[in-house]
Length: 107
Image (tube, rainbow, N blue to C red):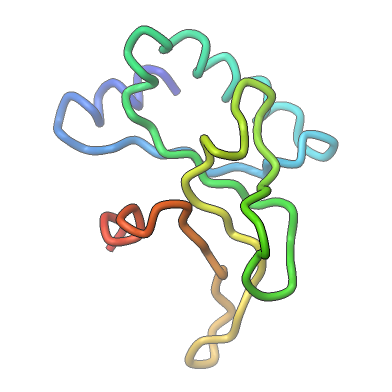
């Protein structure tokens, strides 16, 4: 994760990590992401964006409360996929951004 993020950052891109943030089902992502946060602290994590996939909600979440790796807080999570919707006969993730400007950098 560290080399990947450093290379992207060096070329002017913003690194990002998506994972099942429910540590009861995927402790490995929690462990790896927390290690990344601690090891890259002096570099501000290369300004990485974190994308949570849990918990699922019905519709737009009422409050910003995505599950997050133990080294982060919900406020550190930039994107949250809380469900799925059908768009033009395709099932797609319903993604919300903590900061709307982050969504404009994705496409």
